[in-house]
Length: 233
Image (cartoon, rainbow, N blue to C red; front, side, top):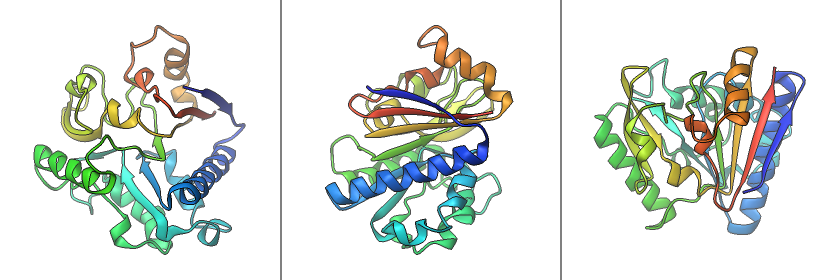
């Protein structure tokens, strides 16, 4: 598992680098396999990355007809809700690019958590086949408690070793979430953490340099893919 840590002087520079990574992974995947699959992250750091992809050169540099969007996690809310990861991605990126609705595979947060997880598992099977999904790129954030996607400390999903997506009750949030699991994320060809802000500095140091396995984010270890940490103050 190749791991690399990249430090950027400002969030804006991180945004440029992450957008370039997206485009590079897209080109490589489309050239090799005819399509590009990416699992998007929610949160404040990825949003400007998505917006940057709507600006030159990316609208014409990426073959958007061959890009398929998935989600690493979702809140159990309708797609129009202010807290919906889908809504954030739609407003910041989808609405401004030539993306077919058939290429956007959202988690249906308006359903019951268990039903939504089952539906998304079927969505993944329909796209990837019966085997474990293998995303070309998974984008992740990092919470101040060490969670990533909706893999929260002391939650049941941390022990999931067979399903690719589950409904997960987050004790710290006292709410249900939908999330990809370790088997799905760690099967990816590339996983990139996007982490910005001084508030993340303590947990970032603990995750990267502390006792292994203590925080959920530390268990993101792609089996055959690369792991990138893209960091800025």
